[in-house]
Image 1: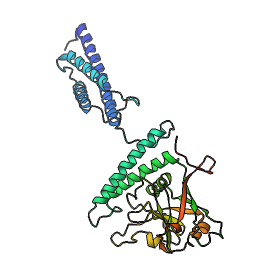
Image 2: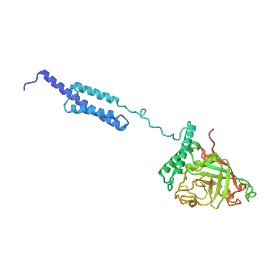
Image 3: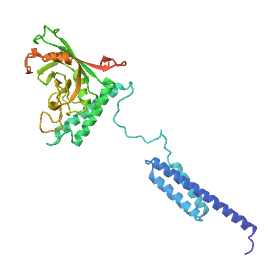
Image 4: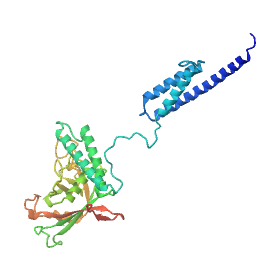
Length: 362
């Protein structure tokens, strides 16, 4: 074969250069695909159809270029058009930044950390607690025979959601510092045998409430009794308890029998009376774990118990024992023999850890 004419040498060089640049372009295109794939793995909510189209176009071009073919869609012009198409599609891939991120569905409001929205937050939490309270009562009322709130999946789930919402409401209304306390100012009536001997009519008891982590529904109910207190007193004298009848407009019995084995009915604790329990309550004079714990006072439900929600930390050895001296046994029909509760005062930890009287927001 003779030597190529000078113009053919230039043509051969031109073709080699073209092939070289086309290979570089294909590698760049493959790199673009890798970038896009990684992007879509990190942001799966983007348009998958666009990704597939880009992969197809670039892959087709790379396959033909790498195998020596340069006629995609008709000569080099087709290849150039394909590159433009790929570049255009690549520019259409949205780059997601933190500020552009797809917004998630709004969830129920959490406890506000800011005081600015405290009132609105508390009102929203009140509504949420009321809604969940009604849901729990409805589930409990509709349980088939032999099913128990303590083990029924729907009942357990709804009860936990009510507890969690109540914890948030407690923090918004009374502050996040615990434990909360309630002081009871007592009035002994002249019918008590030692009225003239032991200081007359005045007395008090201080109750420290259980942690909201254990008994949020129960302590919230007791704080509602104190907040809406309209009168009452110790009206039952028994060997194991001293029971209180209260009048607190708007306060219902517990939505479910909230009980924690970590806060049992020990001597000196306070629990709710009745099934369903509350708002009437009692002071345990002895260890009542068996009398009022799980499976007590009925045979149908081995899990059901009275709620135990606090402990007497002042007055148990003095005024509580004095109440036991009331002339009578069991339920006292004569109201003149009751030891009256004149006032229920909510106490919360202050900034210096000293307890202060809680006052509702103005």
